[in-house]
Image (cartoon, rainbow, N blue to C red; front, side, top):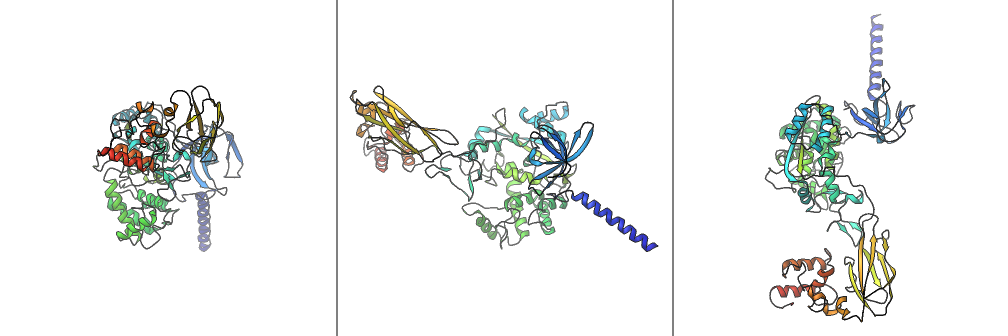
Length: 594
């Protein structure tokens, strides 16, 4: 009888454990299996969106529209390839639960205008947060009352920071697969002749000013319960646990107790968040699977990974530092991050990407951990899944403030298409253009006989998708007609090429046409305003003028109009090394160009 009772108890316990496991596992595979889910608010984004009893094919509970409020209590990836949210919602007086596809839910935080919490209002004002930050912070404070938001006044204007971040074209990069409006068109970023963006590292292009403005604006990341973590202080936090690390490492090739120990020890030793180190290793090494960690020498944070072959550069750095085990690499890299970034005030993901720390003594903008402009958002998302591990302990955020910001958030650019607005050819039937056609030159001259009533213009774009207008037959009126040929790309601004057409027999029109040796040599109408060799028009011929001519010759900055005339020293219709030498000889006093 006693044996039967024991077996009965074991059976009941086994059934209960199995039932508990089924409930715990849920429907589908939870992306972060075994972790406590950090519930967050959301709203429906779409019309007639269905909430179901189970993911994918469950019965429809109800259909809801844009703005309908939900609380997301779990999530799981399903057989249709989508992550589905397990949500609770109000249905009349009843609270119900169901499942909805994640792409139909907006988890952004709506700015809160409720100023009734006078203590928090006073705190934000004392910190110096601008009014445009406060609505987001109110909403976050209500969701997470133990979070502490600290303002960091950079003492910099937004425009000067943008100028600093764009001064070196490769300072911020985006992946080549991103839309065109995310990629720079500045000198050195885009090859207009070959219609390609330069790759500074394989698969990476220089970022546009517009996407840098978006990523630099803190307000764009105070409105999301995940992205806010790019402002989290990344010093060691006693609330971090081995369980939290397991959640970060679970979907990676570093999913073992050995790696949990390595990261935990590295964090404690060098005063760096262990969660941050694990998320950084995940971000930098594709979950511990990249070539920078799979060989003899390992570099889990990709320190020194620059140049044409960043993976090999990272391995070389690891070899130079003797990182021939995972533990050595994780510990050594943590020492580097802690000593060079965390202790220097760059103790958030945002500050590691944007060096706007003014008191660290190492200057601005150059001391930046990563070139990837979007890296702070990616790493913040990884950290967000483990925030619940902190429990009710305080989490501190350092949020930068700039002067001169626009009232509205800087928008996310979304436009796409081909930006090339150059002509590949331009001609007028029966006449030669002056100067000879070059893609970067937009102003030309021709002289036609006095009785000419029309000319025929032909042109073709560099890129077939660009539209060209203004070609064909152009009627001539009066002494001078300006024909305009416009190239309109599928993305970006149009470019206008102008042909100044002068009918001869009207008093010295050769000079007006800028032809031969009279184009800038001190006679005719051009000589009154154009001084040969003085490209920038500052009244002196100097090294700056030489730079203008050199940049034109190598195609970096094409001269046009009066600058072109000033650079064509010998009046042969082109700017070349001969003109460069003549200006040099003038500067040192060997010849006179006057």
